[in-house]
Image: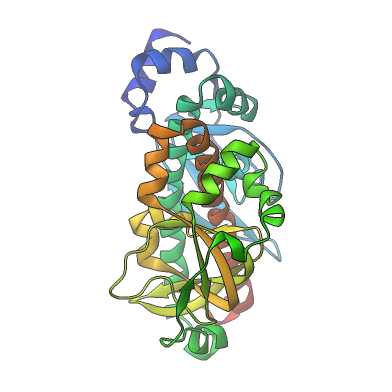
Length: 335
């Protein structure tokens, strides 16, 4: 990498958490490529693995809908990234990315990320965190797109029975203990698979265990929950909301899946909520305890962080799929 391109990296907000020494180390693994105007860089539905960071130029983001219909979602400028869903969550590309002008990109491969997680986990964490914050901005933008779609449609077309009836203000929670769990079952959940026996034993004791009634709503007018949650039994539904009113169900999470990882991001809490859709037992890690692990047990902290950042990237896929479905179902009614 030449000196000018390296200096471009140092000025990017994306890399502001890295020290100069860390960026020098990382630069040896970053590829560079120019895409000519009109080039389709990524195609929706294909699998990939590289992260693209725009150094100069402009790309447009198009979502392909059934019937050869495409819809422009947004444009991305220098300093912004794309390909992050596949890079972190191993999911297909969620949109077509087209170079609007000749566009220069820095490219980081998934293999490099895997190497960093072992050789330099602090660098991998900073990269994933930067991706998560940019991803959150895209999720919020997609929420705004969905809101505009809903405003063009009569409520009876999109408001689900879940949104109207599931939340129950009388639903409550109950504290449980480790004795109420099958620890062998917990140990083999995917969330703990990369942890050794000692790491698992330590972390499980840091987590609160709660039983929730059906209809329990995690974010209310007078609460500000920030914690990571893992479903031991039952199921939880993710909703899009507006002015604290549930509008549309987006996804359901079941046993062994994490949720609320997005609630570390304030903008996500403004537009989304989780509601228990059947009586559930949930393991929870408070955000203060999570961040404290970075000092006391960094190896556990970095493993958890991978899950959080993967979950945030997966949210882009979830929201995009809903956007596609709603737009497709009601395209003939939209203004």
